[in-house]
Length: 186
Image (cartoon, rainbow, N blue to C red):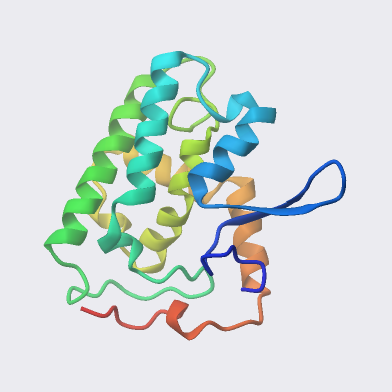
């Protein structure tokens, strides 16, 4: 975790300015906006879609605590544990299912659809990436509702960048006890 930001958390983007000065851009939304300045396609091109994507990204960053409390560990998987699955987790998964189903159903039949929430990859897909791994690690995918939502999860988990992330994680040697797949604190 030596590359974490000043909050002690990730993500944190370490960058240099033109004069070689070092800076840390931390927190997901700040990083996305920083990157989108040079790569505008990180957000949908259409203004209202872009605003909606940012709204959903903010919701992801500030909500879904019950699901986000599942430790983020790409190296381990555990069978479904009904004791860890409560009404709040179920509510989170219903909301996520609803978002994914709504967005994917709008673009799934378009000729230029590439399998992401707005057709092409956006920052919003990046926001949901850690949740995908949590759903799989804790055997929660079966709780997701909707054909398009399930197809989206499958697409994301088979995405080349996601698989590369998982491969890199499998080679990590640093162990952070709180991030291992222990029972959640209630």
